[in-house]
Amino acid sequence: MNTKPHIGNIVLVVDRNPIDPRVRLLLGLKPRETSADRRRKRRIVGCNCFVPPGGAVEPSDRSLVHSAQRELREETGLKLALNSFRKVGFLEGYFTSHGNKDWGSAELKWVASIYRVIVPEWLIDSVICGQGFIRIKWFSISRLPFSRMINSDVLWLPRLLKGWQLHIKFLYGHEVGKPLDYDITPDFFS
Image 1: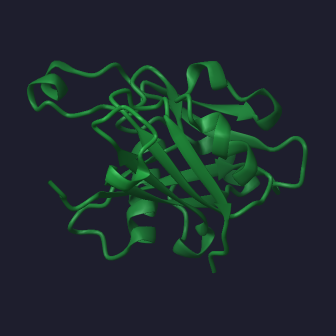
Image 2: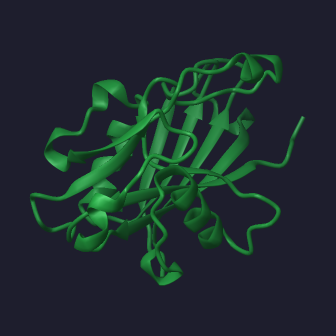
């Protein structure tokens, strides 16, 4: 049964030029799933993990980048101009019911555009926690808390933070966050 994939975005917020070894990334701690989530039988990814801001595209969003701008504002309190957002990646999640590495029978369930924004120095201290996160925190790139993040983040996030542009595909079985297989291909986004 093919369904339309869930469309969303991820925003990588850094506080310095990515070449600088002191660069830091803003991550938010997602709360554990709520009873409402369980009642709606939503598959919640990243509960009790540090994740970058992001979320689903809403009908009122004029474009993917508008959606990324809105999510960043809602989740962190940062309001940045649209021209601050640079597309650096594209992430696809495929699921297979067989539990094996069979890409041929896998179904595309979600697609996320990945944007990077560099926060101006004067805005760094104005970050507040918005809705969706228990708390937010800056992490040095050399000390990202991968043990407290979604398992697959270690495969793609360091490459994007080094300035690569990537098309990333993950194949999942029953457990979200632990891919059965993946494909990470350099790409170019204008």
